[in-house]
Length: 99
Image 1: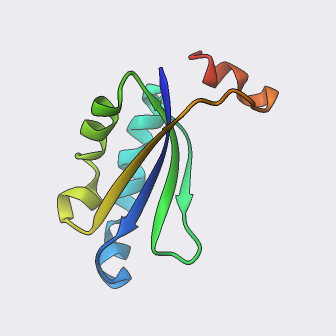
Image 2 (image 1 turned 180 degrees about the vertical axis):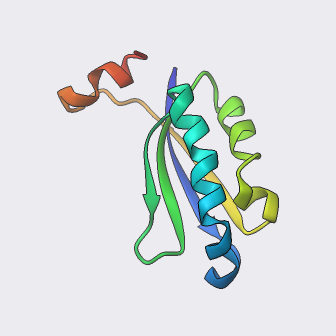
């Protein structure tokens, strides 16, 4: 598995985003259930969000996020940054190792 930081940036006013937030969070649960997501949450200021993820490939992670309600509504862009977590806390060792 490859590891990524996914930066979500809103491209619309938050008044358009807010009604979609529950759908977006329900969508993210699919990624958690797959074991692809470790954590996610809004940025501060609230102009988007951050996700720590893993996936078999960048292409597969990008395809996953194309189904995000934010993407489908055209209210966000996504930046996928691959990284190698060579140093990490023991509590995430299993997740990083693919467990």
